[in-house]
Image (tube, rainbow, N blue to C red):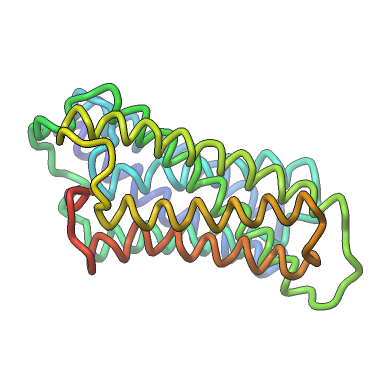
Length: 261
């Protein structure tokens, strides 16, 4: 019971603090925003730990657990990057709004998963699953952070192109793309062990591949400097919309082998 309470308290505390961080960044109160963000990050990490302790396994098997990791990665990236580069601070209102919306999704649609603790299905009892989901959460967190920075740049309109910003955005997306590539490969190995086939064109597999292709195009054309900064930012935002559809839309609209997620 203590772990259930700790999990609930950490989740709702992080939810409130992330919402507070979004509001503080919007009101241009960076000191208060960073304070909320840091405490929210700590509670987010505590929620992951409490969930792992209660489940007796890595918390990687449903929407609630994945969102905790997804948010943790994106907030860590923001705190690390914006803490050094003050020009990125205004993106906090975007990033923390998105993170708060992820937590709101859990509250509205997956609330039962916060306290539920059921035995894992046989297909999920695999180290391949752990590595597959961890790398996916890492990739999604990178893509969320990149989208927040891209939206910030787009909101500034026809500002002079900033090569330093372009390189920073490219590196974040590249890291996320590498993690997504590893995740897809590990998922294929896991699928072969669980279902007897490396690739089944399951809806989530298909949309993950589409997302991978969009980010690959962005990386290739940005490397060749074939796109303007604005077009590159739009491509990053499009990629993140595909991330959201792969995670949320597929679960609700296109059920398949990943429906438990």
